[in-house]
Image (cartoon, rainbow, N blue to C red):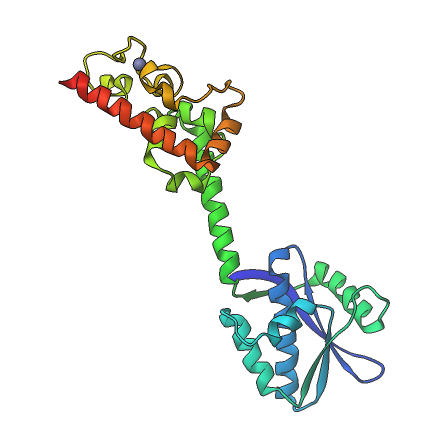
Length: 262
Ligand SMILES: [Zn+2]
């Protein structure tokens, strides 16, 4: 449940018509939900009090959502059922916002009042919103950890900002950006190989095989400058051919490591 600051007021006009006004502010992501809640409340009030009402709203999206024959939203379907039960006693009409229509202008005025004197009402957040909220929360935490971490400086040169795409990418590419893969320099750190060098004589790290080693020259990339690494990285991610080249590079470096072990 996500709290929404809003208040529902009932005002009796000089013409004896009842006006329901929903006030909400700050939480724009739930305005649509709040508009539906106001319509639902007004319809429920009409049924409970056995009166016929017409609800005027400037929320076209709410009307269209209620007209839809199928919806996955439990909340929306509950409101649709309530509206169905109120057929004959509750009408729903759209009015243009900010067009000088007295009732609509009055609703805006009450909304401003509620910004100062509103009460809290809890209502369920839509599933789509929760998914977006949780994803953003996880990404923010991950980014913070990314920036605070003392390890992984090489990866951060290519990826200053975390990305879910990284979690699903092919392992050969991850070998390259982390340097943790079938490379003599990496395996030497764990005493698996005696020397960190490639058979060609150069330092056998992931950069060597991607940019310099004569044994992988068919698959080489142009080495990006330090400043250009993030842009280079994002282009590589989009290019399937580049990922295949990384796979070939890692297969060759793996065979070189196997040869050095023997
Ligand atoms: Zn080499």
